[in-house]
Image (tube, rainbow, N blue to C red; front, side):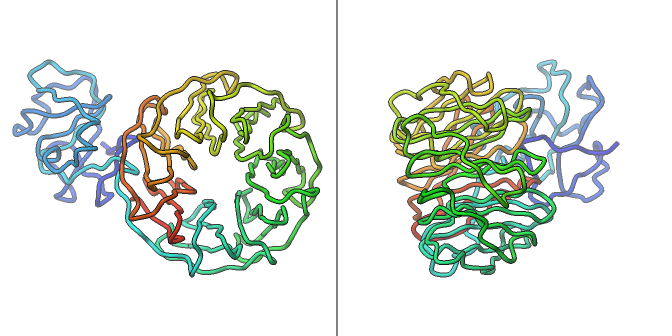
Length: 398
């Protein structure tokens, strides 16, 4: 029977063993069982385990978990009549890790101080956008190493990046509010258009079929493109807001935008052509980040009190989930699948994790001595990237 890993677990070796006592690699790990199962199907040494959701973990692996990882599990004994579990970890397994729980510095990007934006292009290819010299860096090995691709004109900030498929990429810049396009996976870039008189293109989103959105400052406008970013048209200013800091696409023409200085969420049901105010998020002044996590569920990260808000109705209404410690800004969000989410903060450069679609959050790790986690990206297979300030560094989680 083919083994299957849990959505929010990764083994260190990344190899899956076979059923009870027939470990093809002699090491680990998660093994799918027919349902229901009884103790007689398990290795006889598996007397007690730990359960989270539909997954069981053995004592040996438990003893190697960090305090954060242990918080995600509840003690059970197999004599308690457990049935219906999807998977188990054998007693001689290697540790199974929560995705995004541990981070390692990969590389500083030249002498840049800010990694404002990240994008994943597939096949191990990644892009990073920087400040203060507006550069794009490329990685072809899932963020382990990085090479300078190009400085974007005389821009000082690459505030946003988006991947459109087929090698096409967009970059939004400051301080002259331009969109740049690439058709070769970010290797070379050409200016497409200055968006009106705007100073910054804070956010970008791809809606499919060549449709793209750009959110700007200093007058909080949304621009739309229907030709993969080659040309842009003003759609709407979002009330009296100064910045459209964040954008995300929910499918079916639905889009969300987060603003400053009154921390509002705007919704669109027509691919960004028109926008309506949904809700102000408490007394927050910024909606720095947005993420769509499926089935109508959305997350918003705010400032100036570092809160996470959740919506279950495609952004129409929002509820406060949790403040992240004493952090001030939730600058970045990423969704990893299976209910697992990441949030990056300021002023102590921390990554928080959630395993319940953003309802509750736990501190994973501070990233070195960094102050900001400006950007996060999920690359699949448990791999995550974080872009930081003031060292302009990339951190990886595997």
